Length: 71
Ligand SMILES: [Zn+2]
Image 1 (spheres, rainbow, N blue to C red):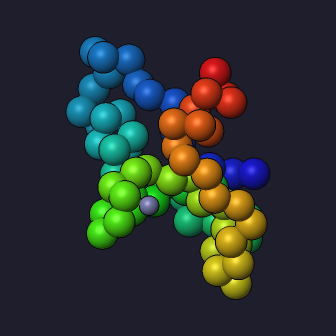
Image 2: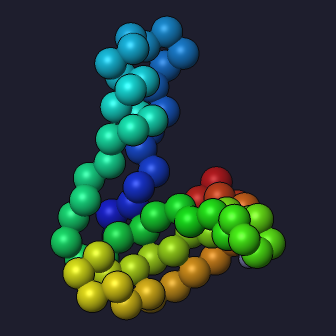
């Protein structure tokens, strides 16, 4: 599944590389994995897998748990 997480540039990468890393994301149609912040609730970061066309949510998990699985 495509995700919103991009490889982090090197610390000495230029401003353009850092701008792209921080602000630019693909916006594909279909299955996509993205970070959501539960601002008004538990304030946790979540990884939500959803279809960008239908808004169907396939899965949701705490971002800390998702990071542990990927490491
Ligand atoms: Zn929450």
